[in-house]
Length: 98
Image (cartoon, rainbow, N blue to C red; front, top):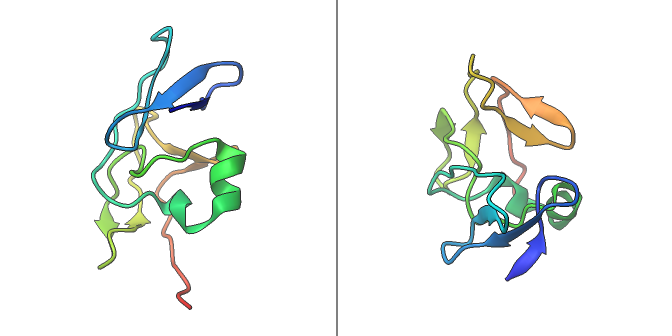
């Protein structure tokens, strides 16, 4: 499945595992965890970030019983989670269940 990638103007695809793969011209790569992507809790967030991946773009510090991340680590190398033009660095996430 081909879909708009994370970088403006770059095309990316979702691999067989449901995660955003490298761009077709191999200019951008990501590594993913094996847990539920927190963006999957809101279709608007997926649309705005153009990320429909099954998994998170990096490992979280902790996860809840549903596999959703509760906190992403502070990474001095700059490998943070980007969400709506904000880097989620050492942020704690809470979920409201219906």
